[in-house]
Length: 130
Image (cartoon, rainbow, N blue to C red; front, side):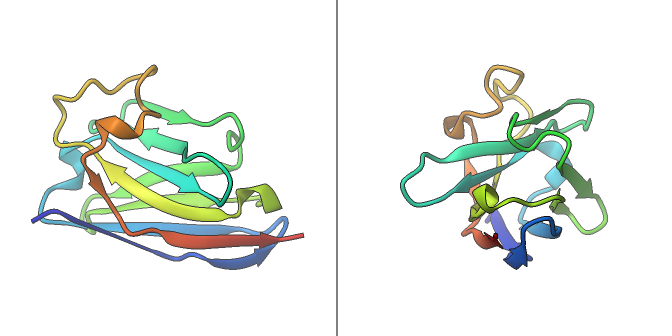
């Protein structure tokens, strides 16, 4: 049974940093494409960052480029999202998502589509105060 569990959310002032984590169990993280999404009330769910199974390709939303970094830890089977220079607009519930293996149509035009990700975590709240 595949399970994704996020942690590390919290409240920070604008300009601060936070790292959220997503521990994957039941499967090997590096055998799937993974992503971070976020959702805040009144807004649509937004893809934030994604990395390919092989680690050769990364994509970021324009709103976070240069501030957020997605990474993975193989021994810990864990996905991370390092968030720097946070702004109030980054306030949201952050979710990790994973495809069912590498054979999914993941790439530059699909990485931000929730429909290609089979597994989702329960989310961790990030709140940035002004």
